[in-house]
Length: 374
Image (cartoon, rainbow, N blue to C red; front, side):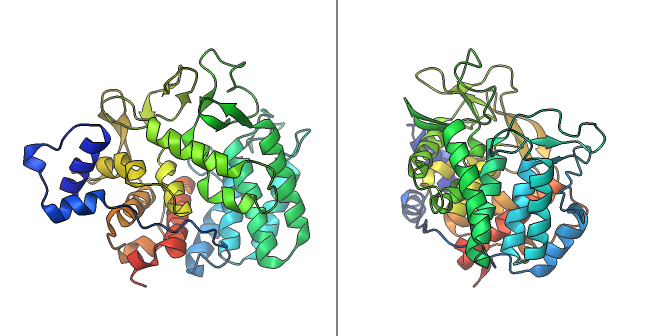
């Protein structure tokens, strides 16, 4: 696999493979063959087949009131976490938990003067919401979860709520007809051309690719196919520095993408979700996955957090839930079987890696069952 990836990365960059990494004809053909992905929309309900995994997650991170606790971030809650929790509840066919999660979200985060959610809720602050800005990925996740709930449980109220959120995202956070086609702003305020000298500033992990075709059910007037295409183009174009990887925050001001000003030029906790969303949606070609697969094929037990300009490791994703994404990418790229441990709950992990692990499990259950042996 490493030799094949070396060839693929060299071709993506326009060079040639090192002589020492020259693969066999079969390996070369495998490295260049189109990925056989299935991008058809698939309902989420029931995709989390292991109910024990959901019960363990719910017991650790979801309160009786329906608040998802970010255990590594001072016990706060945020729209992203509520959206993830709602998606997991639908995947586990747990309507009671879904309704608690949705009820808490409406009561505590949907406090703006529109249909979007305030992004952050702090239990030890009064008021608990001190920043009324939204987080667009959180809104997309919540709306998507409501679509899935409406489909799973035939409740039109969920559908109405999903439509209201999705249309508001389209009105306030989607910028159409740019040089990169449709762009998704990370929030309503703070990232647009008029907000920053290097604006618009983007975060590619906010392109929740599997949500787009499902949101089209309730808000077909929004250009979800255009967002999907722009996201794929941006993932291909956002290759910076020695690492050939995207940074967390990206300026789309000039003719070319560039790392955004004022942010560390790293591939880190946000960007690790990019290949997860690509794989979950069943979209992309080898070139879209190549930088991530190449990074994770390097020797070493830990997944590195990388300064993309120098290519140097600056930290590591220490908890094993993050490695689930690397395993999923290996499945997508070359069919590597997923181990038995891939499906098992992670004990003593924090909210974020535990969540990413379950999302990777769902993606595998929905689209890559051959890697699970069934």
